[in-house]
Image 1: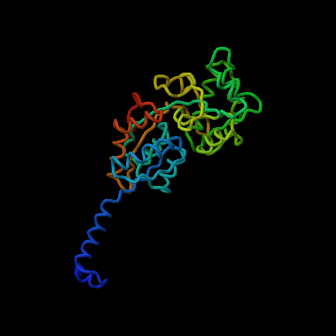
Image 2: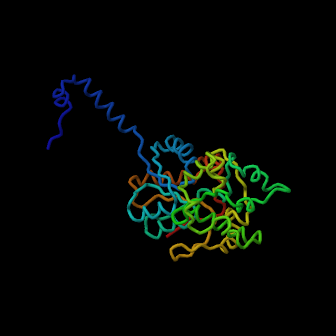
Image 3: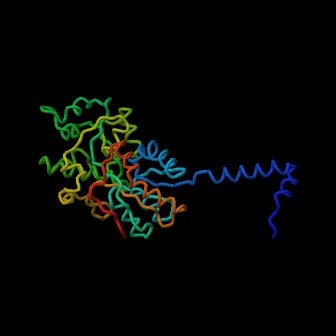
Length: 313
C-alpha cells in the first residue's frame, strides 16, 4: 500500500501545501519532545522525597514524566509478582520485599540507594507533647514510659503489608531487652495486629499533624518532611546501623506462620524485567545511585546506604 503524499493530505483538508508541511513538522517535533512516562512503585514513606524532589529532578535529568505509586513495600512487591501492576522501577525499604521481586525473576539486580532509622514521631498538639519533648533530657520521663501510659494514642502501619509496620515491632522488642522491660511490646503495642493502632502510611502523618494521634512509628525521613517533632532512638534499637545486624536479628515476629527478623533499613531500587520502558528504567536506577540523586536524598534527611551491597536473585 502506498503512503499518502503530503500534497494529497493537505488538499484533502483544504490546507495550503506550505502550511500543511509546517503543521505536520510542528506536530512531529512536539511528539518527539514529549517526555517518556516513567512508572515508579515506591515505599510509601518516600512520598515527600519522590514527589517534591525526585519527580522534577528526573524530568530535568532524564526527560521523564515521573508517575509514582506509593504503598507499603511488601504489598507492592506482591502486586508486581502477581502481575497486577507493571511499573518500570520498584524502590523498597529492607531487603525482604526486593528479594520477593528477585526470586520471581522480575528483576536482575537491586542496588542500595539510601538508608534510614526508626524514630518515634509525635504530635506537637497532643497532650503528651511536653513529656515527649523532654523524654531524652536529664530528669525527663523516658519515651517508652510515656508511650505505655493508659490512654496514649499510638499509630503504626500494618506489618503484613508494610516493612515499617514490622520495623516498629522489632524496635519495641529490642527496646524491651535494652531497657530490661520484658512486657514493653504488650504495654505499648498490644497485639501484633492491633487494629486500633493500624492505619495506612500516609494517614499516620496526617493524623499526627491533626492531633488525632499522640505519637507514631516513623522513619527518620518522615517527620522532618512534615515539620513534626520526633525522638531519636539508640542505635541498638533503631535498625539504622548495619554494624548491629546480629543484635537486631534477636527480634522476631511471626505472621501467617512465617517468622520475620529485622534487617537494617536500607532502600533498594530495581529496574523491572518487564518494564514498559526498560532503557529509561535502567537509566533512572543508575541515576538514583549517582551523586545528583544523593544530594536529594540528603536534602530529605536520608542517610547514605553505607556498606550495603546490591541484591541478586
